[in-house]
Image (cartoon, rainbow, N blue to C red; front, top):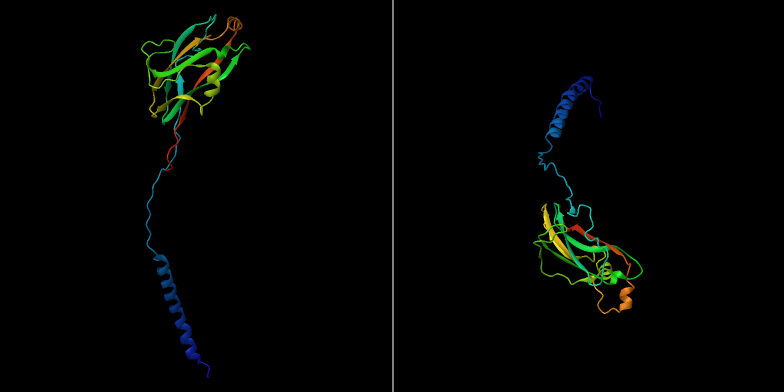
Length: 208
């Protein structure tokens, strides 16, 4: 095979430059128009928790402070519980921190808690009970049967509207029914105390 003449080699060399420029231009055009694009945006997503808040109108005072009990003594007090929550939930009541002397007075102090409307702290004027009130039980029974939220009584469903209220009326009686005189006398000088608790827990919401 013959080698290209000098003239042929010169033509070939001159032709390579323009061809390379054209190919480079095609590559640039194809790269800048490789695809059509479009976007849409849903901005500002955020999550914030609701609030649960529960207060009462006792102003830091105990509902029952009774001295010098005698058999058959009884009394009634009311307390208004207010929900300031932004989410629905359920309020339940229970008894905690029962403390007593060794005489067993807690077995003979009967307490009935009614849920309803009307009345204010220490004044049950105008109180109207809701249906389904539980019978009176001894403090010792309440402290065992209704000792926390899971075992709480008198459920009240809140809607998550601030300012919802319920009034609770407590009626206590020093009951010595069926006791001998000796047993009654043994309760002299006894003392018992208990915390009455109202707790609100929010409902579990559906998965989003």
